[in-house]
Length: 323
Image (tube, rainbow, N blue to C red; front, side, top):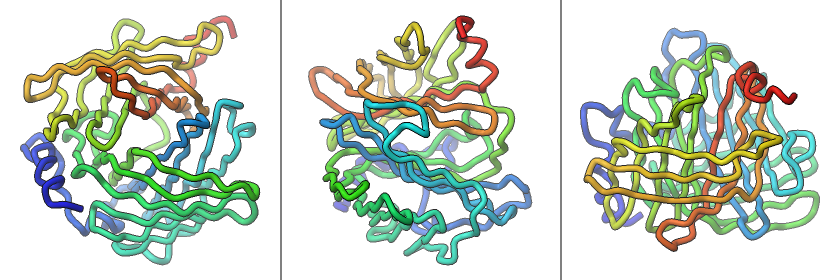
């Protein structure tokens, strides 16, 4: 990873309002607090846009509880329900990983992370017992960007987001598919309970030169962006204000398009518009995340990304009286 990229993004790591900066030791599992719900997560996304394919590799580790969760999800435009999408595997009570980094993490889900460049480069694999085999390389194009201290949706956790180039392939049911995209990863560690979720809009897009991420807490009246970042023209700026306008399917309620208008800490205003290409519904204990693959237009530049539309289940039901 060229030092120039590390330096150009370093401004996003500075400031007393941020939890960071991060270092090579943060590639490994951290010493947990005394909270029973202490949770550490590893998330990598990737895409095959020409086939409307989106996918996640994900692992959660609860060292105090003694369990590992997570798995892999891969969807396209043919289905949205977990049992109908091309591949869905989600675990909740597997053993803790034996290898715990920082150079190598082997999860009992079938996922592995091998570090090739601290905080920036990783070889990723996933293998279930009979259907899926993944071999990917993630190489960051920006420094990890911390979430503001105390900001939702993880007010008590350390959390960062990072865009990178993802290349390799996966083999599903004997058919190989090549992967070459720009996508997001994140890391978090801190208490995380399964109750008490609020609505969250986690929306992003990326390529080699431009990336952006917005966090919002939607209500029936507004959808103001309260934090996030934009990397553009070699400068990474913290989002200070903005708005997210969401179009939804009138029957199903899920996202079909998004418009963003945000201003960053450098005073720059950024606008972007996206159309949905595919989605999956990811259920939790008391919430659902409707994850939508997006094709973005940023001043005529095409980017790919996604929106994570998180709802408490009771609010999702209440929003759809026709059901």
